[in-house]
Image (cartoon, rainbow, N blue to C red; front, side, top):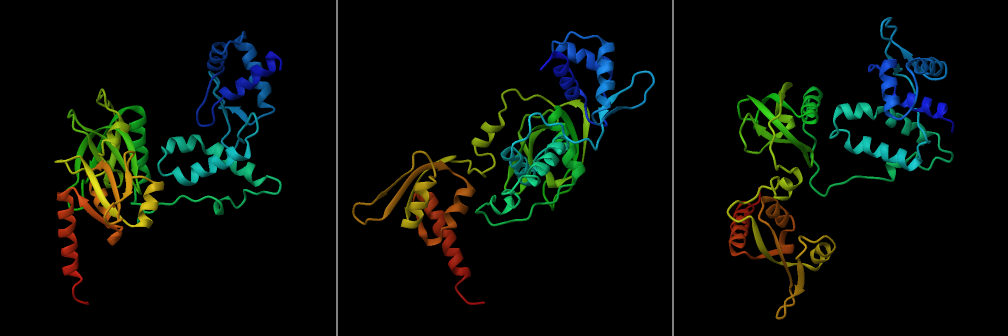
Length: 336
């Protein structure tokens, strides 16, 4: 490929899609930064020539024309997108569209459209019915996603991506009164169907969680978000901050009697790296031991197995389960 051809390809890549514009002098500056030895007049000739072949045009400004790809321009893909890549874009759009920033989805719009074209034009299209070949499931009870206004979602993402403070009206819970807050956003976490914004309020250092569906309004301010040196979102999650930790004892040494069926399941998907499942010498019962976080989720999960699991220790947890099941037995004592 000669230099002139390569330069024009790079020029096409540097021209943004409407409504963004770029001037010839800006193009020249970027091309020089890429190592091309070219003057402004030659860049102007290149752009005029390319406009005859591709869907690019200028805004007609007489002083400093701004060049752009038209909104209806097809995505220029070099090299051709592979079918597997096209399928990946489709999956991203289907499974992650609610969690991705709206601005990012807009930027990826051309790729999503192009992926659809690639998959639709495949000979003997084996991916045409891809939705029947791929599924995303959860073993939790299916729940509907809470409603989040698109405008609020966009503002929250913008504040997070630009490190700006968010001025918001937020209702902590349904019965609480909505109040105005200044939020410093640090990250987003998707828990089942609920999206949480993690951050701090005003100049305080306490880390808070804000469910996006409880925002009544949100505006991105000009103020920079307060920095929190040393904060790590992944570490924050691993500490169990979304798992309703029982504060007096954050980890416990769990000892359970489990059925064969549950033992098989937990052999494939262990509770913890230090988990063991061994038959008891005297009784032959399968005994599971593991050190785990002491959370409400653990209790809900154990209860989901019914009489397939018996808590042996810690004694405090066993007493808690005994009390819960006695209360349940009393509730279901008589027919309704």
